[in-house]
Amino acid sequence: MSDTTASLDFGRRTTADTIFDSLRDDIVKMRLRPGTRLSEAEVAKLHDISRQPVREAFIRLDNLRLLHIRPQRATVVRPMSNGTIKRARFMRLSVELEVARRACSRPDDASMRALQEVLQQQLERLETDDLTGFHQMDSVFHAEICRMAGCECAIEVITDCKATVDRLCILSLKDVASCRDVYSDHAEIVEHLADRNCDSLLDTVRRHLARLNNTIAEVQRDNPDYFED
Amino acid sequence: MSDTTASLDFGRRTTADTIFDSLRDDIVKMRLRPGTRLSEAEVAKLHDISRQPVREAFIRLDNLRLLHIRPQRATVVRPMSNGTIKRARFMRLSVELEVARRACSRPDDASMRALQEVLQQQLERLETDDLTGFHQMDSVFHAEICRMAGCECAIEVITDCKATVDRLCILSLKDVASCRDVYSDHAEIVEHLADRNCDSLLDTVRRHLARLNNTIAEVQRDNPDYFED
DNA sequence: TCTGGTAAACTACCATACCAGAAGGGGGCG
DNA sequence: CGCCCCCTTCTGGTATGGTAGTTTACCAGA
Image (cartoon, rainbow over all chains, first blue to last red; front, side, top):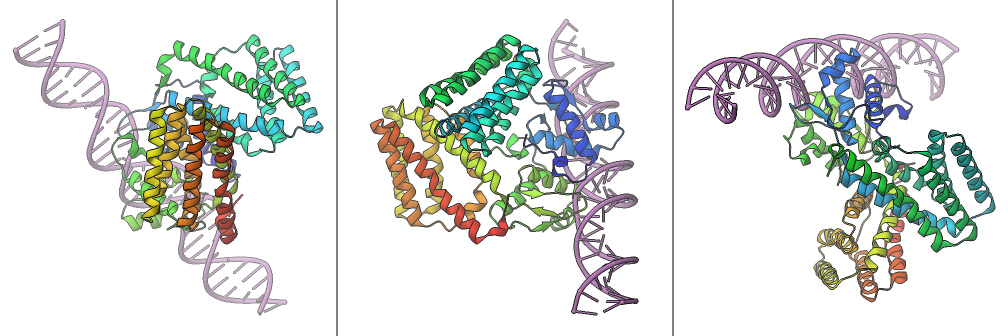
């Protein structure tokens, strides 16, 4: 995730870095729900530090659109933005289609074997009900296609797009059945790549990414207060 | 630009907002060159304020990858990131292609007339050597195609992508001749849309966006110190 | 002239205090 | 019982001082 964590800079880790990581994790993992009120003084007291590093962490989280700071008012955990989600999804679809198009025109045997291997690992995780591992392999799968396409730069773009729906995915109750659908799509993608069937590949990519639309609609219906325009 | 300016929140404008806007403008307009060292104390003294709001502005600029802050070391104006530029350009190409594809399948008379009107305004600005106006119309042109495609959300995505090469474009010496090329591309795009010739439209969009590659290469050759990986 | 060591200066980060604006609660009045 | 006003509390923004880490400059010795 191209976030604002200074610690990734391999520099000295500051107190602000620690507070930032802790709060971001709480927000993204939905331990801090949208609408929750926070104050600099409260968080500072909780960690036995001054307001200053807490304030810096708040600012960085505001920049990630995870917190909403206004003068003299309680800071709140921002609801998820429908506009941001829509833009990120459109961006991801566009990028994945372009990556797929390029991958289709240059699949080589080594890359195909790598994809097959990732697919196999996903199947293994499905069979052992390891959903966390399965999702990790999902990222690996898409990254591998980017490499096949010669677009390593797209990996980070896709990662950032996925990050915008992190909180939403936590709310949705993903089960093995829906993961099987995802796996089927992946298998189909690999098949079309092997056949160099570009039109079918693009259709499958569109359908694959459209799956999340239902999830988004469900979560928005069940949790309307967690969203804003 | 989806930036970190709190002032766009229609809330109270703070001192930090003012410093942020001022410094960002200086950096983007290249009045502060990459590598320039800044310090909180120095900027605070310059504006006759305390270090605290300056620090907040620095943090926000760091988040925009315009400043590089490290503990106990002078803050520097970040060089332009080749990786960021590459990602942004790939993103923009992907999004513009998807937008074009959708626009091509649903051009209506009203939208075509709107595009023709924007094209006419661009020609007028070319004829009066108004390059600033011409570039403003460039954004309007691409936004109009997004509307035609029914993808208003893509407007902000494209705007953000363009923002990553703001500084680079300031360094390149754009002239009327290169703007004529841009205008020709735009005219060709409108023609293909009118003919519903999708393949040709996509080819023109690719070529149109590829023009900046030469500009980027030139600026990188002439100003190697302004770039980093 | 070069190199290493040391001291001074520079720097961001953190703590503390003060101020002004916003919100909430309680009391009084109609 | 409801509404309005006032007071208190909560809140972020800003100012100031201190500290620890880094850089730079100067000096001495080889």
